[in-house]
Length: 103
Image (cartoon, rainbow, N blue to C red; front, top):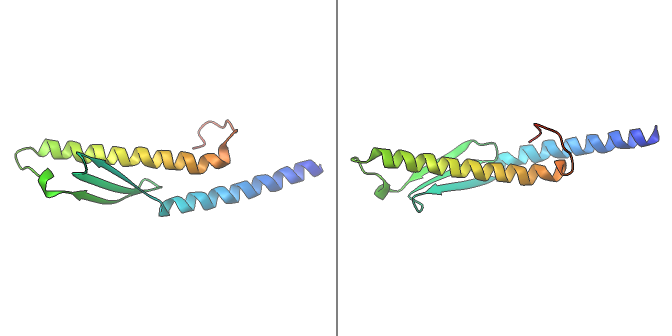
């Protein structure tokens, strides 16, 4: 029974650390870009977009589709980086655990 209590304390501590790590992700930013930096997107670790920057040379009224593609590519790049960030940060706590659906 002593081992079970110790295990429960460790689990509670790990859960508290995971909650803190999840909260800290909102402060971490990643940047995605496309078109050699013509479009840049910044997102936080919760996949909330913080900013979109479009350089003037990327704006061509005769080719709106290209700009749309660049924005889409930059957003997808940023979201991929967020996934990598979350996997790295939360992986510290889930390493070795095989729990489907957990991050």
